[in-house]
Length: 412
Image (tube, rainbow, N blue to C red; front, side):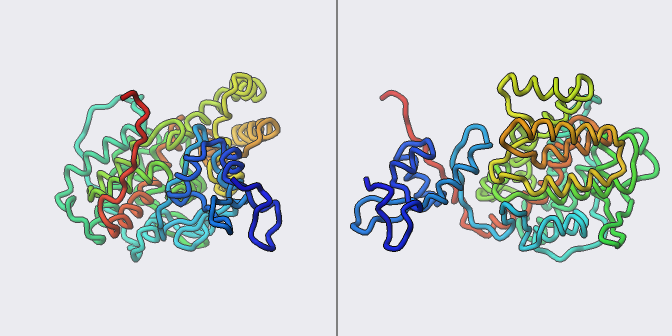
């Protein structure tokens, strides 16, 4: 293999790594490095004499940065998409900065943007779902997954995969799932489903944000809280090819209906994705009871990552800042907001990664007195819009295009 100094004419020595050096930097074998190349995760550059390859140091470092904060490492999967662009300085939905959308548009308007359809200002239809016995301790995420399944059973147009039909089903699905969650007793009247939201200086119908906010256990419903929930919904509606979105696209490639693709995404609800905010909520409650230094210090002494810190894509999650600013201006109890800020400050001095959207969302729920799993429910409802967008996009691709190959390492 060639040394680092073997490079195209005119390029500085420090730009290039040999294949051996690139593999060593990434902590993988040469075979794994070239599997990354074959999948488009990283590019190789042939040497001038035609033997071997060199790798751009900046690309190698970029891949390493994306992997560092995510347990388990792993390689990226590349799928062309026109929906969401991720960058260190922000997220864009179809070219629109998500922070602008969060400040100016309702979740329903942003969902229409993601689906690439004209926005209909009419309230999204709600259909009553069959009742399934559950107790008060049933997780909101479990209720949501059950509701998706029940909604599929009552939609006679479910097999119709045309865009206009899928969009109608998606609007009804999201609104009906939210309406199926139990209202917090203090919010039973008046109905939050017809509430309006003032954002960007204009009043907008905000049935999803208002309806969901009334079902998360908040001690008091205010217009500022509804705006905050709307902001969280918009910020988390899509995030390119996250694990759950890949699952939804794989299901869509088999031409599964939109209920099945949404359920595929919602089923990726482990503590590292979708459910990541629950660990933050528990940490904040512990900090409230035992003090910030004790709660966070115990996590660090055990060698565990601080919940809500670090991200596979960003050094600094740009969505955190947007939602954190909303939290600071929400008028929620200052004592709880200040405690969350102290946790951020204490942890940031001791770990090399920054807080992410899961921390901001859990802090919002904590300050509002919501359930421990409140932001997990917000995430699931929001991401349904993204899963639908990717489902629609995948329907336009060749079917069954995802076929991973396994590397057999057993005996015989």
